[in-house]
Image (tube, rainbow, N blue to C red; front, side, top):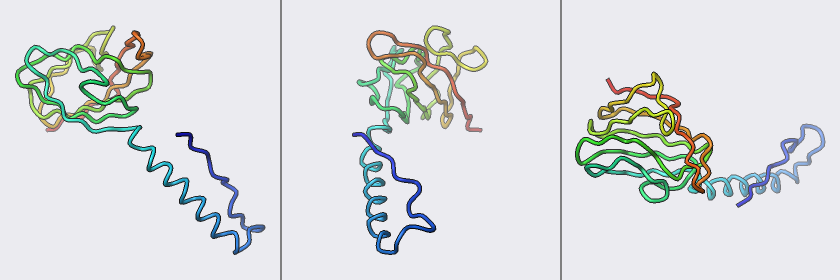
Length: 152
């Protein structure tokens, strides 16, 4: 859905008539409704439990294929998350950890973490990753840590 912009000069302080305000208000409401309708395509919230021996989250299978994703992540046993596949350039994945069973492995070709070290997540920790150069057509790109917040 293409969303067009509103005329930011309306209503004008000097040339708009009171009779124009109704149509300007309706146009504004219509554009806001377009944004609301389009929002589910931009973000999603998904609860994922990784199985023992899982190492990868697959976008489009394990988590939705959206621009922004919030993943509530747990694991059935201790696992190493070594890759997130099928992402696209600019895609953002925010992970909230529900347990201490997931370690994100630092790898300069897959997941680049701040401090160049693995992240042993604890319950309530949050990390946000950004895909760089993925194209969903075989080029995975790399995931770069934007930030992490530790629950203390």
